[in-house]
Image 1: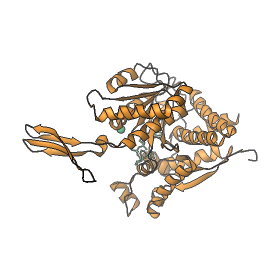
Image 2: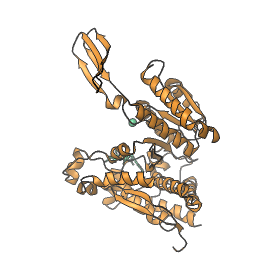
Image 3: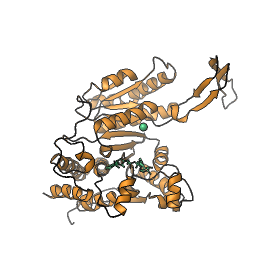
Image 4: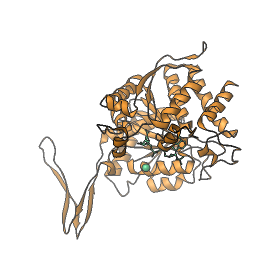
Length: 402
Ligand code: NAP
Ligand code: MG
């Protein structure tokens, strides 16, 4: 233990719930603490801890990420009616991820982790495609109305300062139907663009952005204009210095090109496109347990996590004594992502080298045939046997120590 790698500054550590909480402790004990003198500010976001603190622990953890610049988060239960009964909760607090995202004003990037023995469904993909989803506004903050019959529907803007209102006709309805009003904010779009360019520079990925601005000239046109403006004024030089290109096209063209591409780029998507395309890319890439998720704030602060949830059903089986075969890879990569970022900010190359080594060793473990059930079902060649989570972590550790 004496020669463990030292850290200069701490990262915010956000613990969570159920099976991922079990794996969190396992990964720390076996794969991190023996090698790194971990410096973290620990926040327990387990459901009962959020309940006991009136959810202030979630707010504190988000502020810690902002202050320290780097956070790593375990999956957490989003409370709902069923959880209220299960845990005898007094309150239903909003999803911790939603709360943290709102404070950091960040964009979420989902990136698949690939191994050679699991081929993506799209044969041309050689490298992962990262989807960045603008998680504010549009259909997700829409106002909708059903219309009973003939009549006029208008959009009215009433300025706060009392100056002249703006009014346009949305539709002269010829009969019963439906209407929807959506909005977005310039500042949110600018911050989305900033987060995308920051992430792309970090990961050294070219950037694609696409909307339907031929049809939606003002709404999608504004997205295109602001994205372009942020690129030209804040990132063009940095991108050229890093050899990265920014490419704008129409969303249907982007969808068609994406499936013929070799991958290896960041696809910045509007909210609705990102919702769909992130699931499409995730599913085509392989297992849900192989998807990482990074929240990037326009200030540059980053939070790393696994994209999957708390794996509730495995947890119930674990509580009954079963050694489940739950895949810890995305959790491991959440930690390595955070440690590598800390190393970069603190200029501590030995920490960065450790993060890289742990990632490579984890992938090699799978590629040499030691894996959990979710991957075994997809792998070619199929492995001789399926490991449980504890055996899998030991298999990584054995190689790490070799
Ligand atoms: P989930 O935890 O992602 O699990 C859904 C299914 O996906 C599992 O039953 C399992 O399939 C498979 N799976 C997911 N992760 C896996 C892993 N690491 N290894 C192997 N298989 C894995 O989703 P959920 O069960 O719908 O949600 C459970 C809880 O998580 C909910 O309370 C939800 O609120 C929360 N959640 C949190 C986050 C977050 O904090 N970021 C995200 C999503 C959901 P099999 O059963 O077929 O093995
Ligand atoms: Mg979705």
